[in-house]
Image (tube, rainbow, N blue to C red; front, side, top):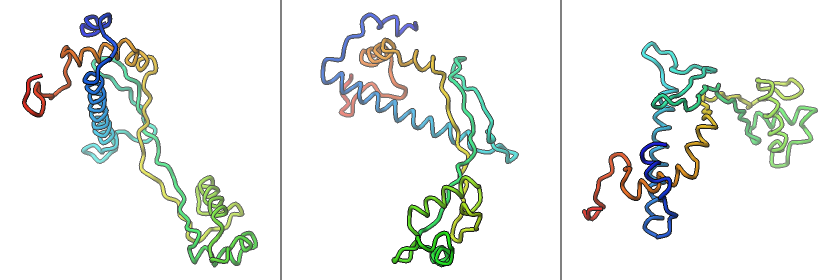
Length: 196
């Protein structure tokens, strides 16, 4: 155990008053905001390019992550997800479907192709990797769009379990409330200027 944990593991009381509960809740929310900002900063770094124009982390690359020598887990850059776009009321689609023996019975009186059929066509196109239906016909108005690569995180399960162990969380809460630990950059006075 670290010094803070040793000093507080046995003495960390249950949170029984409103000020302590409110303080811990707000400290948690502040840490959540810090975590989100760190994630954005790291995500920007993983998806940026080097000075020679190459991606910092190319698709299918995997990299372990460390903080202070402790392995946190790994990140992996996943390829961008492909999505299919097709509007049921696209005039080109309706005209094509009206002439098709496969879809003419699905053209609704409102001059749109039945939404369930549109969803089925999009699903097949994604599987085929081309703007075609299950009969191999090119579908007018259907386009496939590939998204940007996205990083995937895998935190070490044992590390997460240890960090989030109840005794560690209680020790952190006690340390924050008693001033044994402080959040970086926080002033020691409240907004009214009263010392805390």
